[in-house]
Amino acid sequence: MNPLKSKVKLAGLLIILGMVAGILSISPAIDSPAYLTGAAAGSNRVIISALFQFVLFLTYLGFVLLLYPVLKRYNKSLALGFLSFRITAGVILILGIVILLSILALSQEFVKSPSENSMVFEALGNVLKITRDYINHVFMVLTLGMGNLMLYTLLFKAKLIPGWISVWGISGTVLSVLASVLLLFKIVDVITPEYLVLNVPTALFEIVFGFWLIFKGLNPRDKSAEAV
Image (cartoon, rainbow, N blue to C red; front, side, top):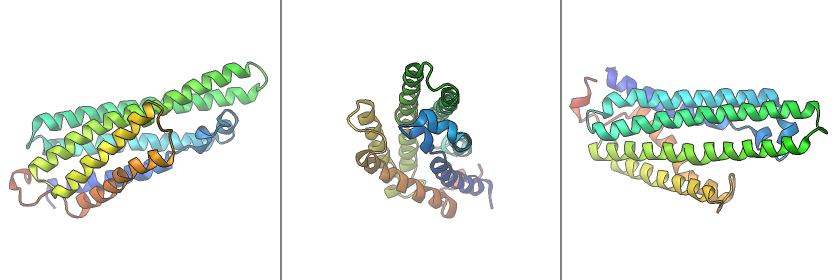
């Protein structure tokens, strides 16, 4: 197997791994209305969620580092834009992990003295939760989406994958970005039917795209990239 095929297959595996890590990174205790007591009670699950979010960060970074040397041969500007936005999204994700663990620490302090300064704990907790929602569901998605639009546009122009897959990726990304914008303006809430429906096309696309890279790879008719 030549180096290009190996890199592309690994990139596809990272997409699938990232989806699994993303599902396992969900922390019901933090998202619960009773998070001030629930997070401390389920502290191990919150920590595991944080670890899987870090795994997700690694998949984001690994994916772009694997594909960038290939992509820049076709359009250096779009490839560099994809690299920049994907790294920025990773940094934002790390910030979300820090806030997640901060909410856990706040919860642990709250259960030690629930009757003392409870309003302060609640106010600070609400600020941290809202900030985390904005980071994870708005600004990370917007940043990730901008990078993905550059990636799928490049793949479409270079015909490295079938056009219908690239168009699906672009369309799904636009819908996910729209969901985040609606969330930012509080037109929809997180984990509502409207928000989930807008993100379904992207979720399905990533499954197809990941397995396509694993089993089909990039367009084999293009000989210029095989030496990468």
